[in-house]
Amino acid sequence: MRCRMQLNRESAQRSRQRRLEYEQAPRRTVDVKEAKISVLRPKISLYGEHVKGLREENAMLLEKIGQLDLQRSANMAEFEVLNQEREMLAAVYMMQQQK
Image (cartoon, rainbow, N blue to C red; front, side, top):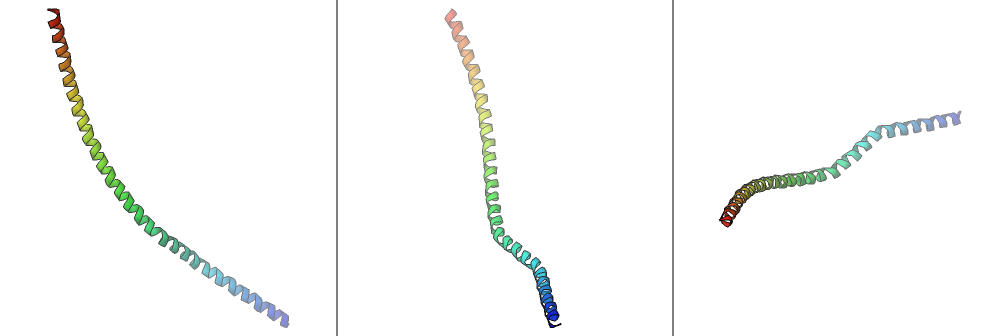
């Protein structure tokens, strides 16, 4: 009988231990997740600042592209005017050579 009581006590102790582990498992999971959050939060902040800087740089580059596109359009218009003038002068020169 004594042996049976001892076995029951040991079984109860194991049962209490399993229940304790079962109850503590979610807390350990929460602790691990909170630790990961603590590690990742500064990285997120750093990446946010990096993204902000990239957006500012992108805006400046888009503005510069717009300015260069306007300059290119002006240069092309000037080229067309000069090309027409060259063709006109070439025609005048040819007419003078024929006289």
